[in-house]
Length: 133
Image (cartoon, rainbow, N blue to C red):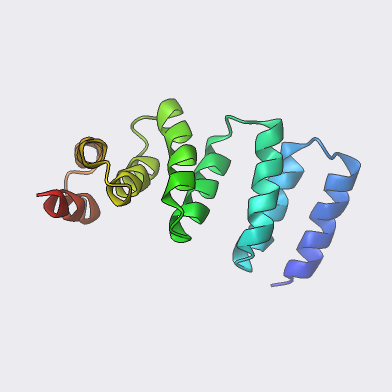
């Protein structure tokens, strides 16, 4: 896996078309594989400056902040995805846990229940609801 060559070619594409979301999304693949979250965060924010409603990028940024335990920032990005796709399984589940950790119990409960509508056997949502009892 030659991530450096991959990044080189994507950087060339970005140089040729700096406003192209496609090239910016492309460089995210090797950065994700290398777990370079600081660089990913920068690229994702650049993409959002061009395409603020990009659900993939909003979700990905939400995940970065969630795993950094920056739940306030994570909530901002997951909420944007939830507005566009209120029944998306992954963003609903991550949003539910984010609300849980922000002590927004009613919101967390509502979202965990939506996850169970989408996936009735989801163990993570069931665990979240049990913790809210």
